[in-house]
Length: 442
Ligand SMILES: C[S@@+](CC[C@H](N)C(=O)[O-])C[C@H]1O[C@@H](n2cnc3c(N)ncnc32)[C@H](O)[C@@H]1O
Ligand code: SF4
Image (cartoon, rainbow, N blue to C red; front, top):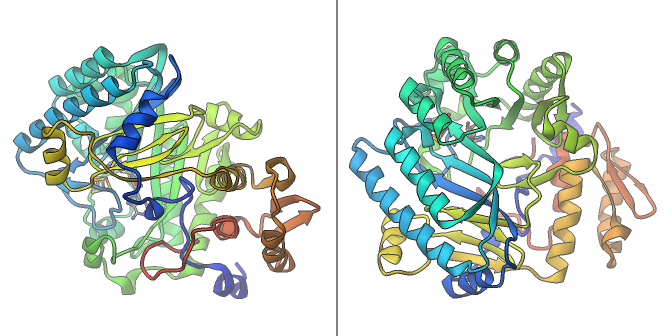
């Protein structure tokens, strides 16, 4: 990696899982707008549901998710009651009965739920929303919490895919981030899920963690390849202690610099590709026969809050504290704090904290950014409007070899791939560089 390019382009930039990005949501969109948006959804509109379970048994110091550590199950039971109320309110507002194709349980660690609660939550959803017969039900799994009854409960509730957190198997890295997780524990959980009928397995890895080395991440990649997951996400560690104060527990002196981070990514990516995985977008890998790889090869890949997806529903209903929803009209985010989330729901109102209604310009820029994040190329002419100022700014990147410009067509080169988010940021009308808000590009 060219040090000059790193110095010039490795800036803090959003991950573009949405556009506009969440920091630009405002109180101008609240519960009333959301209710009106839900009410305007056409009958039987295809929809996805994201349901947030923000609890874990212990804290990984790198964690950037909305979660909290709980010792008593009563807090989780109380939260599940609130979730059911939210399901009631949202389904009542969505009078056109959206038809759910994808159901994603994220966290936190949804496998912290007791088996009976898994079934009753899924039953409650089925009682309030219409589902297609072959609904994809994906769940994020911390293998350390995934005992046999828990796995069986998720399989029985219809789980078709599990995303398993690994991060890195190197014990020194695990010590440095407070996440001790053996290969055997992980393999047991994955074998158990497959035996129970959860056929599709994703694995999450992170590069750029404290004390991580190229040799260590290569070994982790080899161990993960031996587990034969369908998809692998290789996320860059987002170190944002201003937003996540517990990340201060991480020794910053042990963090690799930008060049070392990229070398780690490349080393792991090379092994994954040699093992037959297709590198998709920024940070995903999938077996060539996986639907994500097929969508990527045919220009149908999409980007949403979970990263890359085959889900092309225009309606994503977010449920649970901090959950983000995307409707044809715009984005909404639920209250993040438990107390606020609980009190608003107990008062019978939708727990929306903020959101944004999409303008025509937002939609156009969103489409351009999504195509660049997914396909690495876009024809600006296909999205109309006058993009001259963007093309002028991209010219400097073209001179540095990050992009190629051919008339209105822009393509991110192999050399530019590490800076994909920086290229997309050129089209972000809202972006104001602000210390501590975003993680580095590489
Ligand atoms: C909700 S967790 C997955 C399920 C489960 N909680 C676990 O950790 O095993 C989502 C994933 O986000 C990633 N992640 C969390 N914090 C991150 C950070 N600061 N930077 C990059 N990736 C992060 C991890 O790879 C993690 O597996
Ligand atoms: S990475 Fe997963 S298990 Fe660790 S604290 Fe975050 S959500 Fe919980």
